[in-house]
Image (cartoon, rainbow over all chains, first blue to last red; front, side):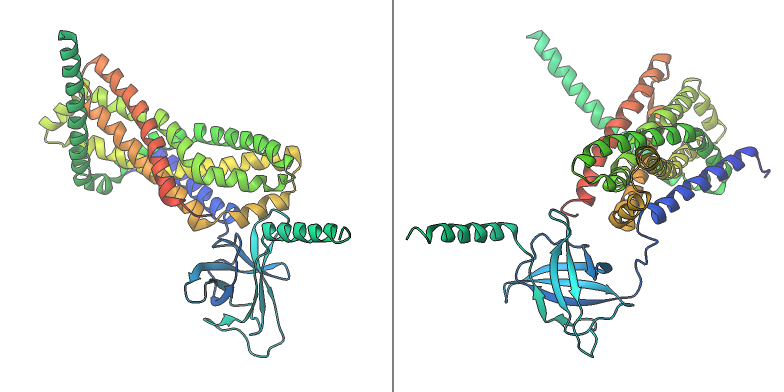
Length: 157
Length: 264
């Protein structure tokens, strides 16, 4: 079988098609960013997770250190159980505080970790003891209005 | 009364014809798969078809991808900057391209650029009795003519769709970063934070693969099934484009609702 110019063109086509796919994977997608490295999973129980979603970032000091792996409802304690998958290169003390925060006023919600002072580090399957729930804007506004109303009615009496 | 009866009669005939064609298409597809071995062992047959349906579609895919990305960049920026989030332009452009526009628009272009040509070629072969002549010489026309064209389309389409998406992102970058002045770092980093390889890009590739197989099957089937006259051939070509477009859009809805339902 002879090689023809047609083969050259098809080879060229396959190569730039593959190059486009690699461009999408590494430059557009997140494949280049240490994804799929070693991770460990810790759980935290929250009273209210607000609008937290699976795959939301877990940040400590503003740096992304992991992702939310799973969110489920515990029917025994009536609380939300959030599994966090953390990068194995980042170790956190056992008494780390997990808080659900919002980036900006209307931005996405993420989990913020605040390291404690414990000597022992978190292991896979550990539970975060201290957690702080998401701030629900409606509740906040309701409370604010209630306080204002109480303030306004006080001098009248 | 007679007119009504005639109408019902024609409706029934059309329904039976439709079911008949679907059944024939399914049997044709099975036959095609069974005779696909030759398009692998005699790879130059398939390579030739990749050249005709893939390489020759390169220019239209690259140019239209670039323009679609540029339009997305312009329109997206208009809307996003109203909410002070012009930096999210990269996210908008890349997600809409990799998830939806890339596979769908590339599929529509592929159907009208390559699918149509395949139908015309096979249909003309049938009209001029070349397929029958092959059968006479104990050459199976499905293995020799149909299967390589089908596999050529299946292989070309995901590559073309990936190229379309990549060119679109570059077009959006060109408008957003180079002309409008969105920050280059924010453009790429927000995009990388939002686009997931497995979830967004692989689903786009799966979509384009499905569309490629659909368009290629419709194209070879319409060509093989056409009435062997000049008029029948022109009808078959029209049907290829119309059916492919409808199939792509309908399948896109089904795949999207399967892939992205209730997530993100």
